[in-house]
Amino acid sequence: MVESDQFKEIVSYLSKNRESRVEALNIILSFSTTVENRQNWTNTDVIKELLRTVGDFIGDEKITSTAF
Image (tube, rainbow, N blue to C red; front, top):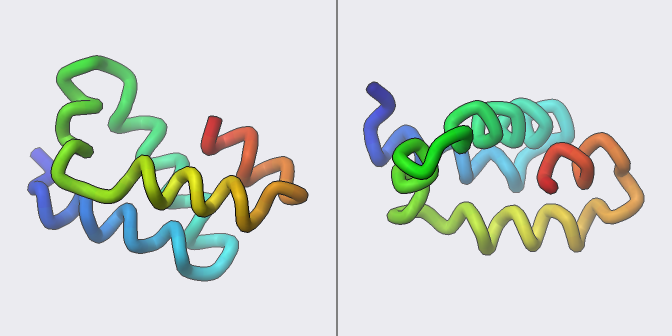
């Protein structure tokens, strides 16, 4: 099982380079498929960082489509 600190670390990669950002979005997506899995993100800033990512990279279709 992924620990809380690891979820926070994954969120931190949203502010890195494009490749890291895409990979972090894919991990977040894969760990968000059920309500139980989504609860793992509650102690992180994932929503704030996803909104910031979408706002900052609105012209990057791969980023924005993965984030939504």
